Length: 308
Image (cartoon, rainbow, N blue to C red; front, top):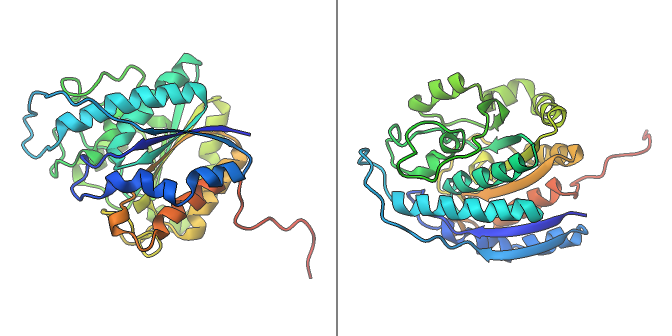
């Protein structure tokens, strides 16, 4: 039995399209707490995190918007995730992907106190590896990985990263929309990349199994950050950054089931759910189903006997 701590993160300032702030309540309405409890776990919903926004000096990049708010969210979520990781298994309900700047740094701090390296399984159509000076859209949900790996340029505006995640401890699955400024930086950093072309050619199971083996060998903590746009928009329409050609229903569940079997999952982000764009809650319900697969429920029980 696992003790889950739910954190609402109604962040929408990192994105350009409104609606993500409704994500935490949509996941609650779709039954996330009840589903976890039905699997025999205990659930503590600590409500929504509320940041205290402080005016900051403007960044030289004129495209950046809502810098004050995203920096405030980062600090508040880092503290909330740190406390939750010490007390149980955090699940952060978003909110746009800017929230990972806070959750990952907070969980990395808790892991470091236990002498454990943090590994990150990044399920997303985008790498979110822009620095503040390279983003052209100014949408800060495109920057969290650069921030929590300690890339330069954040120091004057964001909280310091005391325990940066080693880029070689990150596995990105499902990439299919990468800006030119990010491509070279990702390769240079040594992040493991499994874009949709690689998944089409080689499948998910073997590379994911190898990554999980690395986490286990290092006795590390594993954080999963699941962006709705990782999944194909035909089955998960409730997201403002749709990119065709994403993971199928079964591919997404297979990843969750394999991580569950490894016993390594230590924390989870559910991000970019935009109920305003959803169809009768189908995307929220899918995220709840995927979370259930990650923490003990199987879509299909494995056959235990022979069949003719």
